[in-house]
Amino acid sequence: MVSLNSSEFILSNFGNINCKEKYFSPLTINLNKHTMKTISILFICLFAFGLHSQSQGLENVIVEKYYISDANDATVNSTGGVLPVGSVTYRVYLDLLPDYIFQSAYGDPNHLLKIETSTLFFNNEDRGAIHPTFNFSFCDDNTVMLDSWLSAGAACNGRFGVLKADDDGMGTVINSDGVLQNQDPMMGIPLTQQDGLMLTAVSPEPVITVGIGTEIGVFDAQNDGTNGPLFATNNGAWACINGGVGADPVTNRVLIMQITTDGVFSFKLNVQIRNQITLAIEAYVADSAMVGETEFNALEYNSSVSVNELATSNPTFGLYPVPASDHLTMAVNVYNDNQNVSYSIIDLLGSKIASKDIGSLSGSTRHDIDLTGISAGIYFIELDVNGYKSTRKFIKK
Image (cartoon, rainbow, N blue to C red):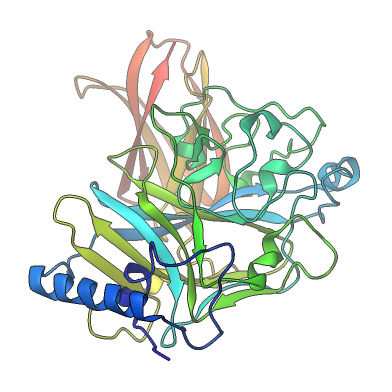
């Protein structure tokens, strides 16, 4: 019986485990001689070539409020299972530096991994699954897009999950069952405008599970009272053999889970990433870092506190529709009360062509920007909240 530390666990098991048929016991890993030999070879290589690194390829953990359900979602949606009013769909992203890939989210004997709700997880009963493997053609059915699952970049088969604010606005899903129409400003951009699904020249990588058995059933296609309140492992992981990346290689935000619940949502994660250029492997834990690990507080989250929602407590904003015609809507999230907010429109030459003082804002709001006097082209919106500035690009058509 052998216990492995966090960085050893994933590296030593790819290629040696039949993930569909063989699972580990809750506290220990049973290893045969072949596996032990493989581990020994890997350890020699790792220490000889110095692949472990203390550099920081993980920039942040982003929690996005993707959708908030209303009464319309609960009454119309029967095919996919009744969705409680006020349920929130959260998306969790790892914000990585360019050239880094997501390898795994794991729990080991020293670091528990857990995803928890105070009530139950919502699982779509029509196309729901533990990973987002349903086809894009089903995204307009009932509440398929709100299913709870674990990922390595995908939000459905063949499409990446991206922040709604980073969506290109192309091919937005129009729901055929009359649900997912809520316009609550607390969730930022409505799904009817930008759905956070993006098609690129490459497809997102599939997910495997290692050392995880029946406990992952809380995310399966059922809502019978066994769908929660806890997913946890101290000897398993969901992982990506080839490495998960974001839809945009520059921002490189990798979607690793989507959870829908009407309760308090919390998680405590440990993740492993790798630099594709140097092959350096980096392990990050929520707390109690050991040798070869980096403690990263944003890997622990509780929705009742929401300290790392949308990356930081700094103000954030999104723009829609993309591209825009005569009007552009700016969804602003201000995390402190009574903040002075203004914005400027800047062209590609850096010239300020318009500006406006919005005034004092608190919480989540929307503001309409009149573009009727602006020529077609590419521009930037610079938002200023009490001196903190943030910029986003938009296209006027």
